[in-house]
Each structure stands twice: as structure tokens, then as C-alpha cells.
Length: 74
Image 1 (tube, rainbow, N blue to C red):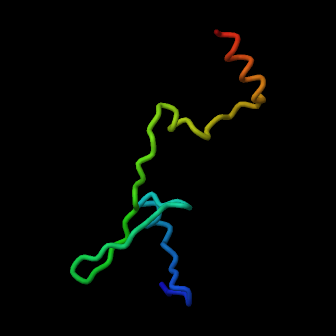
Image 2: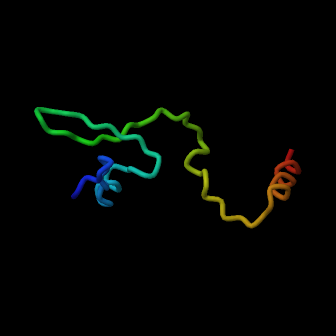
Image 3: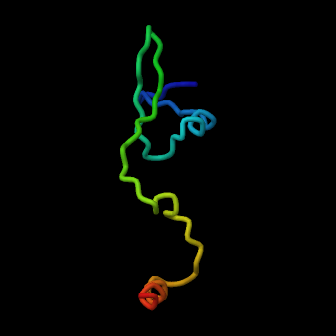
């Protein structure tokens, strides 16, 4: 692995996957007896019952069609 002139290095894919590092993930470097470790910084995001469902919709309905369906049930 080689460090660029800007001090950057590519984190290998298997390490990113193992740590759950995706684009925009914050990481930190921690030292222990002269060794450095990369750690993922977990942010405390508000947890809702909808978080696990975010971004998985597969419907071809428009927003207006979905809103009409939800309004009919009230």
C-alpha cells in the first residue's frame, strides 16, 4: 500500500466491508503502544422504526398516488 503525496491511502475493500465503512463514514486513528488502528466513528442517529426501510421502495407509483392511498384509509 502506498501513501499519496496528499497523505491519502486507499482502505482495502475487505477492510471497509468488515468495518462497515461506506462513503461519508467518519473514521479515526487511535494509537496503542506505537501501533495505530483505524476505527469507525459511530454517530448517534435518531432511531425510528422506519430507518431499516428507508430507500428500499420498489413501487412504480407516484407520490400523489401513494398519498391518495394513505388518505383513503383515514
